[in-house]
Length: 420
Ligand code: GDP
Image (tube, rainbow, N blue to C red; front, side, top):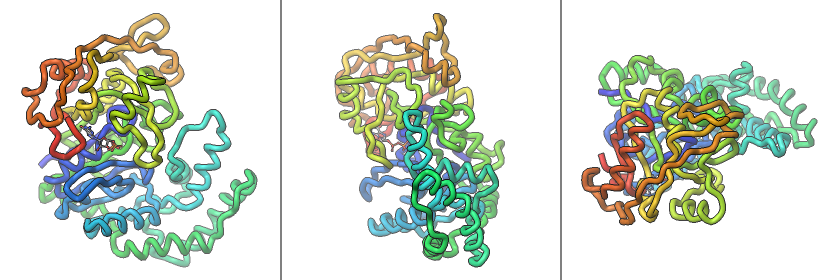
């Protein structure tokens, strides 16, 4: 059985939720390996439309074990709310487990995230304000609290009080309200009590799954362009969405990850700040955004939209060695007679298809080729060969420029609207 990692190959929001939901039907274990509730994976299936923030998309398969891996940061209160929403819709969350080594995203991380964005002013990062960056900062600075620490209530309360001494000093220095140690500890302990025995050593579960040759799915958040090391720093997330991050963040030895699926939207979108060479503005942008429904799943913010930029997924492929790519939302392009397609950038008078670092990326000019549109709806189509020849040519151009074969094509939001 393969261990499959699902990785975003652009700026995030590539439609990983749908691809994960599809593959999770056959999976025994689904693991989120990085990020926190800043994620917003939209899943449309027979139960309805769901926006998952922390819970792995495998939750809709009652037979799959769903794990928040040690590489995630977990806001226990947000998690219990999300679980309650799912339960209310008739989806059981009994199979959810949280790694006892995952770091807790505490209320002060949310307060510090908002403070940081405010103080950055015009240089703001455009975070979701959920506290994810500060939670990872504390983890790296060795101030983090791991999930297992809630088991010793007295010690946990002391840790909260100790951490708040410095956090409150910062909040007050910038004119924000300090947090009350008792209220914070009560809130987190109450959420932990709701989770009960679900906070466990997930390595043992994963090891057992590997030993019985279970199908394991590793679910990434955001995309390669937001990777802490390889993305558009500083406009990045504070963890590694790449397949390399999946190994550490889920607790799977690297050589056991056998399949890496890069999810690529048929055009480009970005939420938050940072360079985005093919970005559209004005009426053209509004039309594409409306047609595609490009609004943030977590924040509702209108997403920045642009034409397909092959340099980004090519960069992602160099870092992930995708065994295949999944192209999503091809149907959104149904109405265009001609489709601009960026295969290269011009940087300081030279053409390149390598991804430059952030400051240089801000200077590049996208070099467009124009591909023919197909001007007919493709949502009902059942196989790739049946697509209009212009749509097939568009997909071929994606394969040529990214360098990986296409294994799946999304032609509508439904799980079933995917050509395999
Ligand atoms: P994720 O965070 O990578 O899962 O991406 P989002 O869930 O934020 O965005 C994907 C959006 O596109 C969701 O609303 C999906 O239902 C929708 N979607 C996914 N695949 C397709 C597709 O092939 N066609 C269309 N029209 N919508 C899709």
